[in-house]
Length: 427
Figure: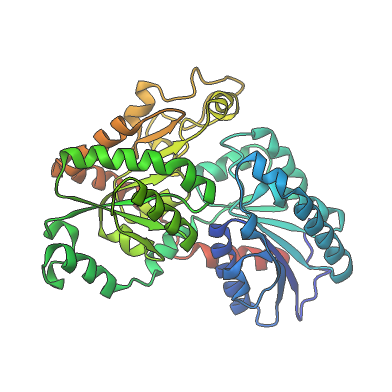
């Protein structure tokens, strides 16, 4: 449903909803781009501090409730219900010309439903990955969403094949990686304090130390659930490779404090930094991370990475009945999608034989991933050591990543393209 005839063309009102920290970043950039195209546009919504720093009137910080586990989500249900009532009143009283959703499906589906009831068109920017699990939700996409702005070619194809209106725009992480401000002084200090070499020998390949950057996640439960596995893996790496320097890239101060406390309990003293993830990724010889959208940023930098995600025994059992893709890491899905005769999807209406990966699936991974209920530190460490101890093995991985990046970083500015498609169709 388009809304061109009814829009307030002189000063359209656009509502945005973004609940995840990464979604907040993308929403903020989209607001800035739409404001550049339409200087008189007004913006309101529920998002986070990044969007609040733009012209958008953010009336509730959704990012403080970015949750993944059922228990924590249930605890926030009364707050979600109140925010939804606020959205309903806003849609009826202020009549936005358009609603733009950014990921965060558990909440945003409700926003989409209320917007459609009020007769307001809905765009899903960076749509939820329903192709990966819970594919029945595509019915909601068809019913409540007028346009999905898809990030990946396989995603765009999947939506279109199922009757959804989708446009491929590419992934904003590629654009953000190119435009990222890098603290060169911090990079130089990293190199000089550990190796004593000059800034002309800044790159890790030129120094004696090989940085292993650990990425414990952006959500509280990701950090707490996976830190033990990350530390166990790092310990096994250090037992065999003395020239490796682990560093932690924490998302926020509370995460850094938790990590430092856990390190102290174990008598460890690895550096932990906040707000320096771009620099630590660039300094890395290879990385050890928790599954998430960060894998696209790692792809954009062509950094060999091992992915770990620890889940409970119950979740591990249930996952077999929910997942519809062979991998949880986006970079692996993109890589396998590009292989001739291969697909990242399981056959329709057929359950995978097991929750963990088959030998063939593991062989095809470009980022070794371990979605596990047990201790995977030995296998994860061996994957890292294959790169750390053999430059040729690492070089071959980097070359694959460079080709994959070239295939998927195909738009100068996904954000600008998204704004263009939104304005063309709805405003």
